[in-house]
Length: 35
Image (cartoon, rainbow, N blue to C red; front, side):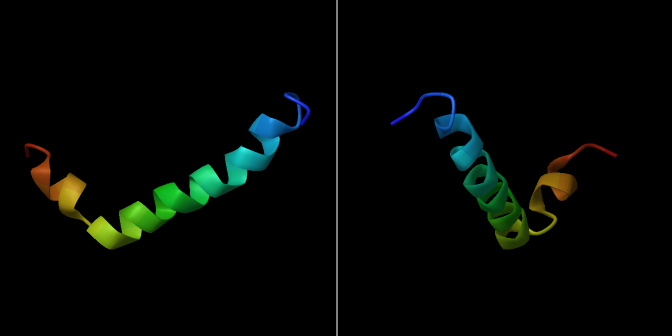
């Protein structure tokens, strides 16, 4: 296990998780923002 390679391999799944949560919550965070 090389520490230098670890962050690079976890960077892509992290982005996927973020997009998954965004698509799951859809516009909930935006609706919570004050207008």
